[in-house]
Length: 247
Figure 1 (tube, rainbow, N blue to C red):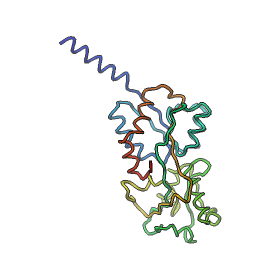
Figure 2: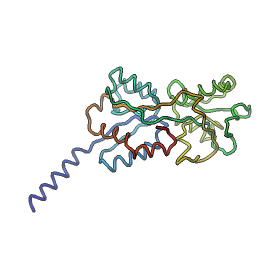
Figure 3: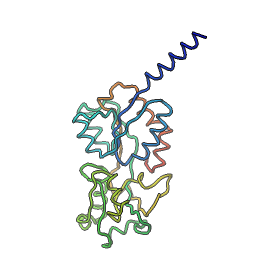
Figure 4: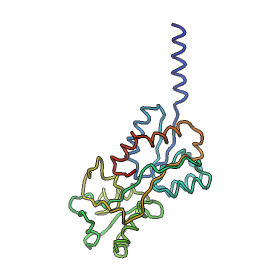
């Protein structure tokens, strides 16, 4: 009996020692699926995840300024590649975890039509986008408007958020009647949650390949490897697809 008790205590103690916390910088567009993924990951592994949501461009600067992030889930593939090249990211750990989709969205029904023709109408005062210098979805929005030959007219109406989360908030609050957001913010399970939307054809903007990378502060940490491996799992992919991302 004594041996059994000691063995159980050892197993419990070992489990507690192995459980760890992971610091993850998460692109704002991926905030919703991240919550679902983290909940399942923590339940299955015992590790804890501390997520910080924001703009990829800002994360890049923060990482070089010593931020404690151990993983970056970016909204593009360029930033992780730069971090890897500069030695701030772990070589060989980078991979594409999702391909984002751009949506023109209004919080009100009947505003955005199925072909995005509203962009050619003069009736709206403002259009929200994420900062194209910091957020890949903002850059994709500008690229799409230019291909549609409407950017010159709409540029003066733009309300620019520092991230895709803020761009979405401008529309949700009514500060802007419509805006370009990530599909994951307004769709769930393949259905629009509210308002009206046009899924922008991917021929109008460069693919939004979203890469993950282990950062130097997480180098060799088992919990970091465990989270990145989980992000590649079939269970995580089901969640990612449910929010409208391609893989």
